[in-house]
Length: 303
Ligand code: NAP
Image 1 (tube, protein in one colour):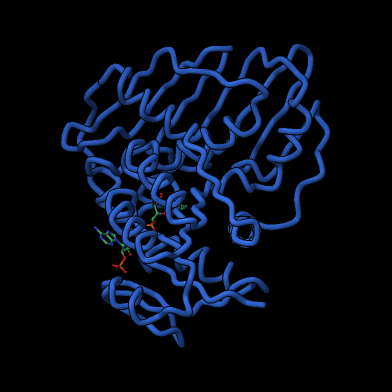
Image 2 (cartoon, protein in one colour):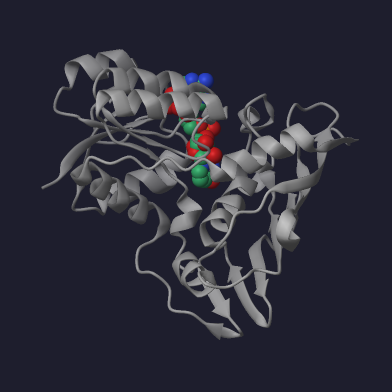
């Protein structure tokens, strides 16, 4: 049976991914939206979140597609109103607020899902399975894209809490923390801040265990979302954002569902089990980079 769900924040990712994923699912029906400006044709829309919560008792699940800074406020109100909640990545602006949400959800007995869409990319499960019993000796991540192409005029990414290049970079870290058989920790970082911005536009990270990452938000031409992980003589390559996995030169079988349908499938499973899924490992690395990273000032940035 289809479960009514409400989407909050009808921006780029809601329109590009959440609306089609819900429309294509047998588990969900889009029963309302909450937005200051946007709407989805044929779906009741609210501009006031509290009004939706009080008027729509039929809607027990809320999916928050807002940027990270306003998310805690919406999530805490939803949980207080007894709703199950899905959080876009990154799950909050700070680690502490997501821990607080988890505690609130536990107390209220509702499901909370801190989603990491890149973990659902089709090649990730094969990489994780192959590496499960291996000792990783080296890994190199290259996550290089054009912010003007993927985040046109989204000023919030350069405001405090917007995380800058870590907004895409955390996707790479969500894959890394999923597939590595043992955790690593950050040892050093160089963060490049445009002189007129609050968040970095590029970052080089060095982790324990021979793991390195390069994030760049000014990449023109070919966009790069890939990582190579070595375990002695074995090599695992995740390319196209983790959607293809090549192990020792041979393409591995991928999973069936696209990333966002897989997230909604997982939320349906969590709901049935009365469970929560809140893994903050990718965000810990970002917080560590912002704590430990050496800051370099670079040319100003304008969209
Ligand atoms: P966006 O289009 O700039 O913003 C999403 C919506 O959030 C806006 O349309 C706005 O909705 C609402 N919003 C923005 N600021 C708000 C505020 N201060 N208070 C209340 N509502 C506010 O951003 P997006 O690209 O969809 O990204 C949203 C989240 O999805 C981010 O965490 C991002 O990391 C994640 N994500 C984005 C992409 C991508 O390709 N863009 C991919 C995967 C994940 P209303 O004006 O309708 O209220």
